[in-house]
Image 1 (cartoon, rainbow over the protein chains, first blue to last red):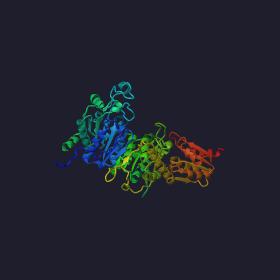
Image 2 (image 1 turned 30 degrees about the vertical axis):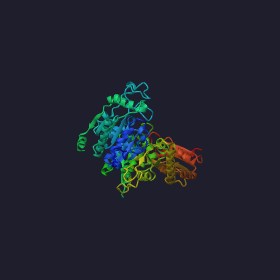
Image 3 (image 1 turned 135 degrees about the vertical axis):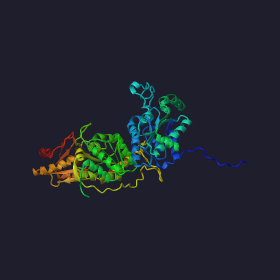
Image 4 (image 1 turned 60 degrees about the horizontal axis):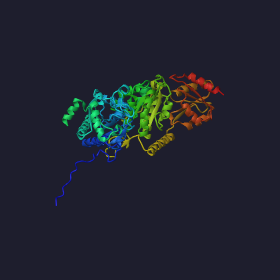
Length: 260
Length: 351
């Protein structure tokens, strides 16, 4: 008879992730990004000082899944709301979680000005090139030629203009400190995403300025694909227009990262 | 404390500071910009939060954010800016967080002009944004009263966890009068178990105006209506001036009421016995008090710097029990007391 061995937990739900079923569609990466954020909150031990702000869009109910204090903003206004919170409570870690329609269309003004003021807040920006919750209309990040329910013949740039590249735009602003684009289409990218979100929170906690992590994401339902097809489409189409990488890492952030 | 001579806008700003306002967010717009300018100097000096926002949308959502953390917070604007703020104010009302918003009204519609007006009465007293909500609206007619009502506004916002508005206008914002201010004290933060301050040693808090389940959203609405009922029962305020023997009861608020007071003195010299009923809370509107006052008079005259907006509330109060006349000026035109006296005489002469 072999001796009973003590079992070691090697994987479990992060404390900062609620033990509930989400409303997200099968194959959607929101759940992955939520989990990564929760892991970072656990790793940094900041669950009790973090306040999240959910957007309008598919992740409007993010407050049901990430276990910190949470507010739900009007469409696009999360960075303004975060500004109000952070200015009164600089000791809090305040992050906004926003989709492409919320952040890059109706909320562009709030985004740009929170960034240029150098607000010590963090934005997690989910870019899946479509309005998911309202049923798959064109987003500001919809690719040229991409078919949506409001570009039935594909996005015609003569009529509907060009997709917005958020990291490239925000990185030009002096108040932005850490602006990077990641994805979550495979485990390796998810690990890189987690490292970036951790850095973004640390940048905020060190008071170095505005941080934004863009996640090139998917929407199997509104893209009309299986989850695996959507991840393939993401890699083959999205990454060419939205290259992954670091768009702005201020020297102060580099110094901070060297210390960690 | 000794009286000081202050401009209305600056007095509103200092009153908020004395009331313990911890955060101010605003955007420049005439004729309220002095509030923003004053706050930009004073708030940082006191270690409090000040941001000149990118727009009124930005400002009101910063207010919403700060209010969610339980801070005493204020924004100020003028008519076109107040229109932009309706989105955030609806969210604030539904989320049940306290906030104070001041509208130093100017001529409209559209870009209008920068002269005094009372044409935002409907927007301010009947909700303004989407959904069933009913903000408390306080109507000062002097700079001193603006100070007193700003302080009251913070207390009422805290008490009922609702947005409270000050309905002022360009005349009140720009004029200078002697005022007495309360002592400056450090901001007091009462216990706010609902606030978003980090879930340390308590279950986490969520502030949202989203309720996808209709019966749940109905419950939120019923709770709001219960709050508005308590406000109606407890917070109606008004002033009566020379109403005891008045044949003509003039109803006016804010700047219009000041002009009416002068007109009443002049009219009485000419043998026309008039009095003033001045609502101080234009929401909740003092319907019963006005009805009682109206019963003592023969006729009513409503005077406003608008096409006749409060007029509808006067009709609701008095119904068809007394003839109701109206005199109003629009587009930033402010009547002289003599114009009001003429309107009063005309009202009494009409059969």
